[in-house]
Length: 208
Image 1 (tube, rainbow, N blue to C red):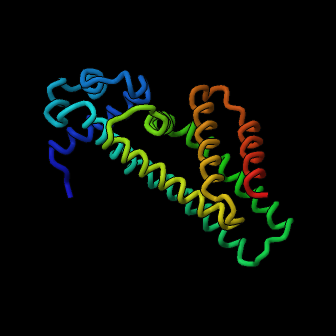
Image 2 (cartoon, rainbow, N blue to C red):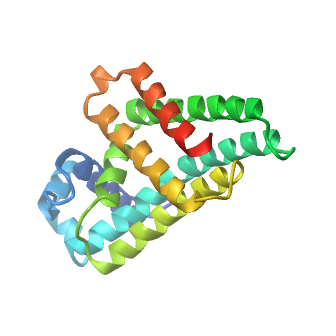
Image 3 (spheres, helix red, strand yellow):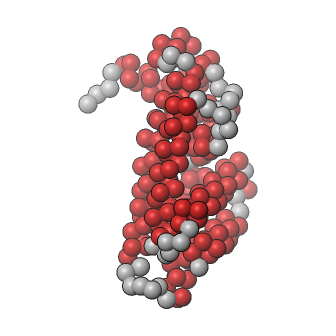
C-alpha cells in the first residue's frame, strides 16, 4: 500500500529525529534541529507532533520497528544454534566449551557489525536505554524494549543453566552495550581481538 504524502513527511521527520539524537544526544535536540536535519520548515514538526516529548516517543517507537527485527533475528539465530546443540543433558564439559566458543564468536561479530555498519542505530539505542530522565510514556516504551532484549537473552542462558538467568542476562546486555559504545565512538580504532576477548571472558563467567 502506497503511503500518503503526510505519512512520508512524518517518516522523514522521525528518521531525522533519530539521526539528530545520534549526532547531538537526546537532550540537545529541538524541533528546529530536527527540521534542519530533515530539510523542512520547523512548522512541519509542530504540525505532526504536539510537543518534543511526543516527537521523541514516536521516534523511539519508529526506532524499535527498525531495530527490533535485526536484534530479534540475531537472538533467534543464537537460540536456534543453542537448541540444536543442547538436546542431551547434562552437557559435558567439552560441549559447554564448544558452545561457549560458538556463542562468543557470533556475539562478538554481531557487536562489531552493528558498530561499523549501523552506528546511528547504536547511538540512538544507547541514548534512549541509558537516558536518566524521560517522560513516563517514553520510559514505558524504553522499558518494554529493554525487557524484550533481557527476556530473550535470559532464555538463551537457560539453555546452559536456569540459575541466575535474569541477572546474567542483565550483565550480558550491559557488556554488549558497553562494547557497542566503545566501538562506535572510535570506529577507526576498533580492536577486534579485544572485543572477541572481552566477549569470551564475560560469556565464560556466565556460561561455564
